[in-house]
Image (cartoon, rainbow, N blue to C red; front, side, top):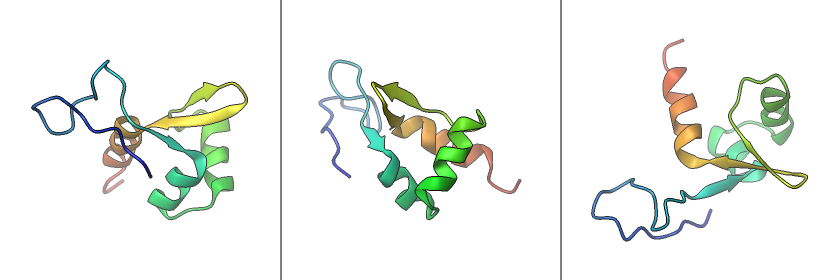
Length: 74
């Protein structure tokens, strides 16, 4: 996964311009250790945050991390 280096003095803050690193479907599936099909099912069911860029899905890293944190211990 490639990341944009932030010029912000705060770790984890959005890169300059306010844009955060985005992840592909494949990257999210790998990060969560699930199949791409599972991620697609979560998106279609409305249970997983994503951004549609044309016909492709992209995922904002902080949204993915927040989704994981909300499910810890659930």
